[in-house]
Length: 235
Image (cartoon, rainbow, N blue to C red; front, side):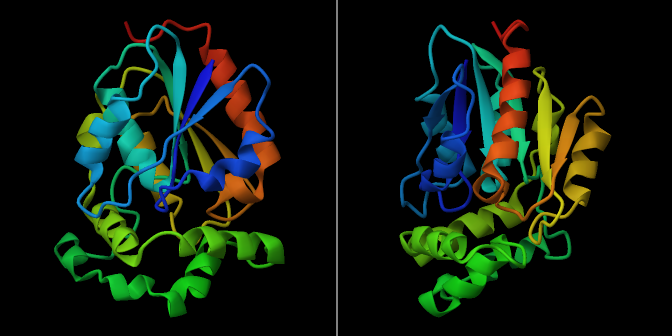
């Protein structure tokens, strides 16, 4: 079974490194990496992802945080071979419901300038995160240009794939972080109201579950993915 890993807002794919070492031997991971192009929003990234899908074999898509809406849009298009979708600490509409969509244009690259990279990294992590984890997150974030992070945050604040969610025919499983500072529990509730058959697991940890709790996340991802292997993929 192939597992297609779609990264969070950094888009580098590097943050999947801890997870990869814990995945089941029967799972072949494929990591997507997004170009540093501020003009590439969800529609453009969807086109990019579709060009890289496996042919003639079953696979599961995992959308981490920023990529959750992308995974839903992909699944709604019924690509051949797709067996299921895993959403990790993600959403189908803006997780900041208090922030009006019209104000998304106010998001500035300045918000992601280097003086703010340390507090930004800490927002992804719960209190007590190990020092090496904090340093590693900051190192990865430092690779991403500020205008890229700003453009992707604007996309998050404007996104709404609730109509597409209702057109998904494959099973969906949601991994919820119990100490998530960025994606509230209401994001899962919105998904469940639209698709009651969605299953979910809770993991004690911060927003970056796959990085801070890789063993438990890999166990749940492996169990769910391999259970879907016996179900018919989209034709």
